[in-house]
Image 1 (cartoon, rainbow, N blue to C red):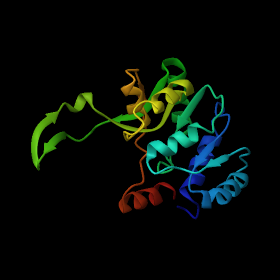
Image 2 (tube, rainbow, N blue to C red):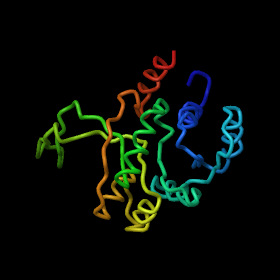
Image 3 (spheres, rainbow, N blue to C red):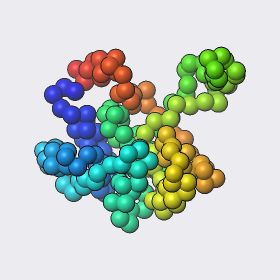
Image 4 (cartoon, helix red, strand yellow):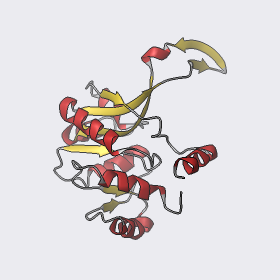
Length: 194
């Protein structure tokens, strides 16, 4: 967007966070040279690339294997290019305090549980949040979580930590930290970048 890959926007924001020591980008091996070149153009040294896996969980595990002895690891999707440095810092700080943390925004829609095309339950909106990335964890905790139930998929890393029975702190997310998923999301993003 705006003549640049979405990853460029993310790398700029991550690069503005003082507490981030190193960055690992998980992407297809054919893109590693382009990602390294982009990082150099942005003045970010030491960006490492590793190939991803078949599932999201496998890709995060690949990145986790490349972080070495980092105390805290943050996971962020490049599909959320407008994440702020402040949100990244807040999630990392909460993970330092609690072991695991995620950004989330309150649900504004009524949420229904559906089975067989029929509503079976209306969930209490005031107890629900829409989870975002970044998510941050004690590296040791996230490694333990990834070792549990390796054949089961998970929509995010917090679920893996939940399976361990460990708490996950929630920090206020940002409406602008929108995930680019549908074509209309690209139109929204273009408006934001003007």
